Image 1 (cartoon, rainbow, N blue to C red):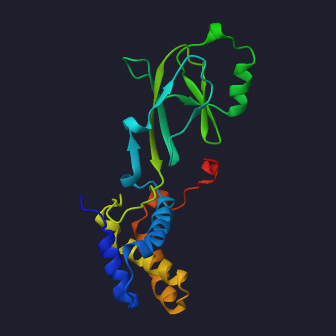
Image 2: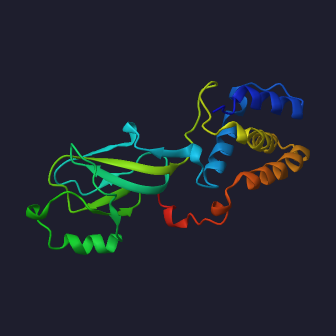
Image 3: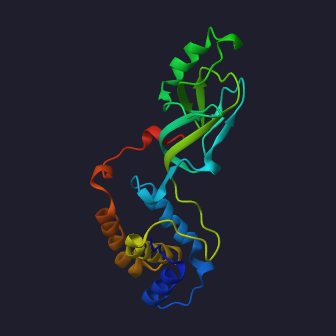
Length: 210
C-alpha cells in the first residue's frame, strides 16, 4: 500500500502558497492534520491487532493495568496464560468492579474474565493469580511524526485530503486568511468523502478520558 509522503505535502504547500518552506517548518501542521483525521473515524490504517509492543505483562495481584499509548477506541482485550489466549474480556462498570472487590481475597485470585476501565487504566476481575499477558485490539491515534522521513500511516487515498488540510493549517499559522478560506473548506469536504458512513455520527465522549 502506497502511503502519503511528506516531501509531496511540502511541494504542494510551497506551490500553492508560493513559499519555500522545509519539511521541519510544517511538521507541526502535518501532525495537527493527522491528529484531526485520527479522531474522525475507525480508520483501518490505524487499527492495531495483536502487536507485541502493545502487550502488558500481568503478575499476581495486579489490579490496575495501563492501556497502550495512543489508544482511542478499544475493541477488546484478551489475556494469555502462557500457552493459550482466553476469550475476550467482558467489560463491566467501574462501580460493579468495586463491588466485586469488596469480598475479594488472594484466595479468589484467578484468570481475569472481566474488566472495568477508568482513566488510562483497566481493572481486571478476578485479580490475576499469576503471570498473564494482556493483548489489545484497538483503533489508535496517529503517532506524532518527528522525522522528515518518518512514515505517515494513512494510505494514498488520503493524499489529497492531508495536503488540503496541511495547506490550511500552514495558512492559519502565518495568518494568511485568503489561503485558509481556500483550503480549509476543501479539506473538510475531502475528509467527509473519506469518512465511512458508519462512523460519521460516532460519539467519542465515552472514551474522552483515555
